[in-house]
Amino acid sequence: MLHVLAQTAPGEVQKGLTAIGRGIVYGGAAIGPGIGIGIVVGNAITSMSRQPESAGMVRTTMFLGIAFTEALALFGFVLAFIISG
Amino acid sequence: MTNLLAIDFPPISHLIEWPSGPLGINKVVVLMWLSVLLVFGLMYAGGRKKALVPTGLQNLAESAVDFVHNGIILETIGPDGMGYAPLLFTMFTFIFALNIWEIVPFAQMPVTARIALPLFMAVLVWFIYNIVGIVKQGFFGYFKTAMFPPGVPWPLYILVSPIELVQIIIVRPLSQSVRLFANMLAGHLLLTSFAIITASLWSLSLLIVIWPASLALLIALTGFEVLVAFLQAFIFTILTAVYIGGSMHPDH
Image (cartoon, rainbow over all chains, first blue to last red; front, side, top):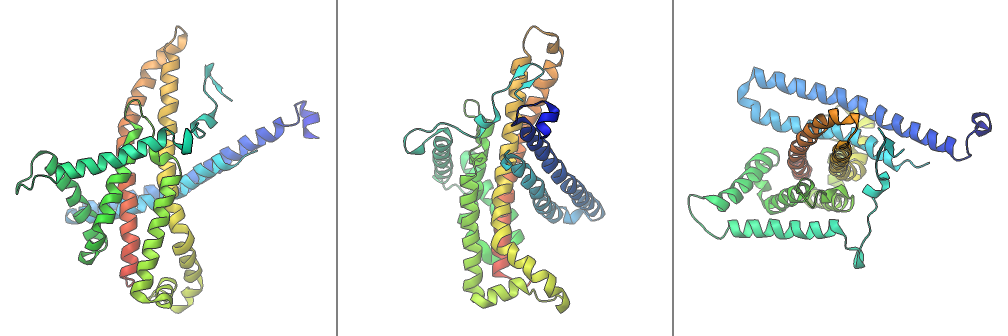
């Protein structure tokens, strides 16, 4: 019925809504890990500057933390491709 | 959807669906075979000379082995994890060799941008860390220490144990494979988009003023992708080591 009001072909409204959904999926998935990685790296920088001898161990743990939080953003990215109209 | 600034992009499915030859052999499979030959050849040639002070190729191979032994195994598992050194070293060098095809001209395709290899390797790691845990602690002992970690006050067990069970059964292999796959796929899409934009902007129109910016960004992103290739191989390997270490020593 929406397509009668919008004067579009029957499949286009669904394609448009799918595109909006994809954008929302990735946009929403990118907020949390952005903040999370900022927190992880910020704390790692603070600890590396307070105690430079532990910089190697802190750097390794920082990469681990980045990998864990970045994975969530990438789930959103992959799901945005999987969602089909 | 394929018209941006009046530049024609191919449909996005062409990045994901490729034609295959007989037995399903396509460019990705050939690059994978080349990666196997490359890693094997480099390490074999690096191990031929047994000089006490390494130079040249032996130096490269030995520093790679040192990196995995000291930077990954000794940091996460400890000295009794050295039994897994061949597995972790092969994993690291193989994944790096698979990823680096993304920036090699005429290939330009990271083999790990297809879900098959990362998924297979993550399932292999899943079998390894579960079997190591079951062998070391017994079947019920392994799940008991995984779901009820010692040192946690007992009311928190209601929250922690379902999360930990889902974590070791489902989330770990899934996240490991998707992390590697999606990182490489995103990098590949980025490089492809900027390459097409740079190529299409080289035309007699007003848009040519932004062509240098597009080219500079393409070059910068290619350098960034080298870092991402190395980092993703490192993260896959160190996560494997952390999971195996967690199965071997459950007390921390």
